[in-house]
Image: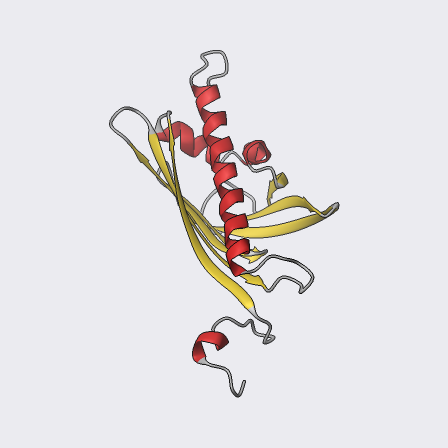
Length: 176
């Protein structure tokens, strides 16, 4: 692409279209042991309870959850069902769970858990993305897009925290 700087070339996809690239890091402290946090995070049937974008997650590969397994998330976007496929890249109970996009919009997301001194768990999330430039009729620029992703991820983490704390602190709802 003549007349395009290296920096700008790095912000284009293979078809030459402009993309927005970014990395987001967030942390959340959950008042629950690390084993419980990891169990909730990797319970695929429960993902829709803490990620409002997701309708269902299906494991496409047979066997136990492990690196190499493909997960299909079903979302409803604009009234239409959309499937995103991710490969489990990191599975180290109870400390790390990572996914890489096979078919979708997020390059990778990694959850790292560490237990604190008082039985709480810190979740550190790193999400990287390459997204096509929004259509010209939208008012979302790179900064707005990043903020929207940050808000959605923060909301999901808060819902996950609330779900875990509610169920691990209630002896009648405690996981078996």
